[in-house]
Length: 325
Image 1 (cartoon, rainbow, N blue to C red):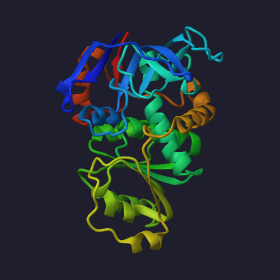
Image 2 (cartoon, rainbow, N blue to C red; image 1 turned 45 degrees about the horizontal axis):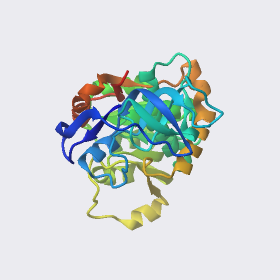
Image 3 (spheres, rainbow, N blue to C red; image 1 turned 30 degrees about the vertical axis):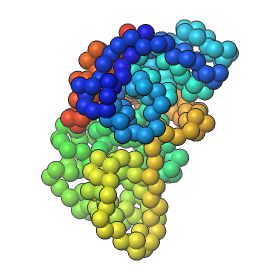
Image 4 (tube, rainbow, N blue to C red; image 1 turned 135 degrees about the vertical axis):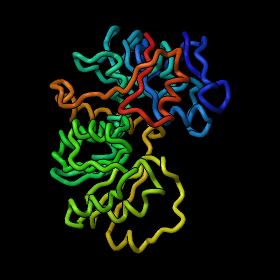
């Protein structure tokens, strides 16, 4: 089969699509004929050699395709259309997927649309509900809201919790799209201090939950924007990973719960349980169209380097898809 690896740690030019051995199946795996996969920030870290937890040399953590070997797992059959997270190896013509992470593709969705669901929707679901404990009608602030996880989080917060949704993004076009998905208060971080807008909209009470992809550059503004007893979930460091001065007293005074998380390095058992809960809570909404994958662009696998450059340019709204077959 053909698959994508990085010749050596570095830029997008290191990616090559070449012949590789077919995946070896562990007892818990099934074999997928991959039709589409998607680009994620963790793929860029893997390409650069910075992730520290990638054991599979083939890049990619999510896939959509057809089951071609059930490996004895009777709840699946050959020909089933499935999507899900894999332990690396998604940028390939075939991929091993843990059977307990295989999600049936909702009827009416293409493989490209299905590939836009697993990583971002599971991350958003985990962050909003397993960690952030978002309640009905609470206020949530979502940074990098036009990203894959951001667009998924807007939809989940709106559909499952009827939340009041505050978002930040860097262009009018991105903010308009977030509004179409259900965001209530739109803030262009290039043109305004979001703390002022949040304060005015909440009578200076702040939001109950923050989904933070940015990190250090938003530290002070997030502190000002979060409510007493608020939950703050750190899921990215696009704005830096080091805060030079932290006032622990400010955290204590507001009784803030600050949690950092990454999904990809989580255990197989954790991902299986998250997948099951996600399916139980969301599948009716995918079927009726209230939840939908958001695709920015589709590249053939041969153009994987260009797809990575597109993500690094930070111009995408939603997911960047790689088409295999």
